[in-house]
Image 1 (cartoon, helix red, strand yellow):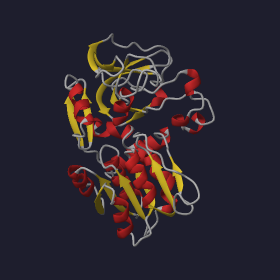
Image 2 (cartoon, one colour):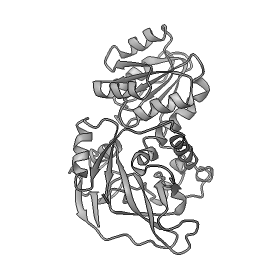
Image 3 (tube, rainbow, N blue to C red):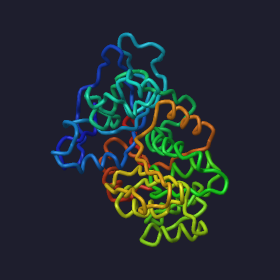
Image 4 (spheres, rainbow, N blue to C red):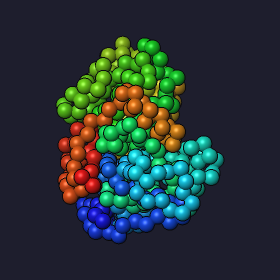
Length: 346
């Protein structure tokens, strides 16, 4: 089968022929309908060899959806042809966090060498994908797999981040979303669906700010050196009760900290290498700073239920498997508006 792999440190991904996967005991093979492209992949491919945490090569794509194609011995409860999405942050399944469905915070994944598909293990940008356990598959009956597949990360990650701040996002509150691309434009929709908060969107791209308005942002602000002052102005000097930074670069993390209100939340989701200083006088009183990772299996089910209710709809660009390298080129150049999705079998 064809697969898009990261094969050499610093080199672009390559479309190659690899053997079709065969399920072992307890495993499942899916025929991939759709696979998402993410900035996390760009971050991984930018790592030098002495920092890269897993061996090469591997097939890219940590957002995957498809139909069940083959079942390993002992697998029950799944039918051949059933439409499913892949829950990406695989864990051991038995530690205290995994027992709560929080495999994104598995306590033993590193020790056991468990890696997410597309981020160390073979992922979804291929004609077929091997899934290690049926618990990592979620039914998507009634949903469009192409528009649904980004929700496994670009929906789940902001949903998990926003849930942590729900007690502060009450009537009269303000939420700031920095970076309104793949994750950020979904976060705006989630904030509108889950909270009564006023949503202010920041980005450097006019196209992405236009998308932010389209999906429900109340205000848009150019993300420059004056952005935090503009947010303060829009909030009567108070700042935002919750700030979500989906870029995470030093300029945006500085803006995020400067936007936060007294007792506000600053959540750094993006992988841009920025940090927020924490200490008396560094931020407004009582500000909390967190850096969450992905989300739980239960939260993915909740996100998909929001999609079924029509509360969230991902803006997508689609590509064939042969054009997958082009999707990464466009993503790296900042030209993708919304989310890029590969259709390996179309």
